[in-house]
Image 1 (cartoon, chains in turn yellow, red):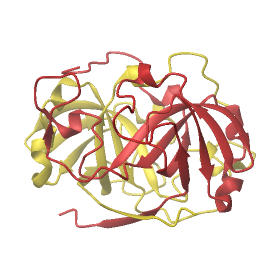
Image 2 (spheres, one colour; image 1 turned 180 degrees about the vertical axis):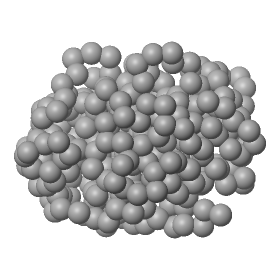
Image 3 (tube, helix red, strand yellow; image 1 turned 180 degrees about the horizontal axis):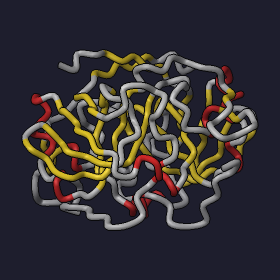
Amino acid sequence: MSEDLITLRAIGTIKSPFQDPVGVPIQPRAAQGVKGEIVLDPIYQEGLKDLEGFSHLILIYHFHRSGKGPLVVKPFLDDEMRGVFATRAPRRPNSIGLSVVKLVGIKGNILAVENLDMLDGTPLLDIKPYIPDFDPAENIRVGWL
Amino acid sequence: MSEDLITLRAIGTIKSPFQDPVGVPIQPRAAQGVKGEIVLDPIYQEGLKDLEGFSHLILIYHFHRSGKGPLVVKPFLDDEMRGVFATRAPRRPNSIGLSVVKLVGIKGNILAVENLDMLDGTPLLDIKPYIPDFDPAENIRVGWL
């Protein structure tokens, strides 16, 4: 089953202060205020129309420096092994990352953003508007965390 | 720039009641209570360890029946054309979908879930735990919405 191969192409690049995996914020609090830019491939610039009205964006990107890893991992600051799908670890069966960032402004194909927690040069796969209504409002449990 | 090609492989399949794009919930409210299953490829089952403690999951999946579309689109129930990155439209430069669903239970490689808004047979790319702390808490603006 699930033999489907899906080929994606980066739509741009994320510029962040982090040149090395060591030092990239693990907890969202540590990413607060970290500034950077999204350099969108100009061929997609028209797709940014109306985005400026949103305060926050969901970025979907490729963990380009993380290979596949084991299915159980030891999260940062944790003593136990956890299933990789119960973590946000970058080494996972498909190396896809997800972050919510603050949109500061857009000029042409360049987006100024804050609260970055990914490596400099990260290939961007998609931008979606962050819409709180799309998320569950109550009765949240966060398991081993 | 951005010539990187990224190849992913589905890790499983999402079973939902929706056989046809017409009728798939557009608004999250309409997806409330819609039941379905995730059939994970058994080779990844070990990665589900500890996931059961989380009430909600982020599913990242392939809009397998949506081709690429124009960069400006007319959203459902809207009269104006919007940039595709300011919408959740399935036809986008990389056909990646994102939904937050409720986890009901796990048996082996099968996850019972609720609040589904994707087509039956959708190829699953990743599962991440939903952690409210990872999302912005205040000063949210949702633009044209």
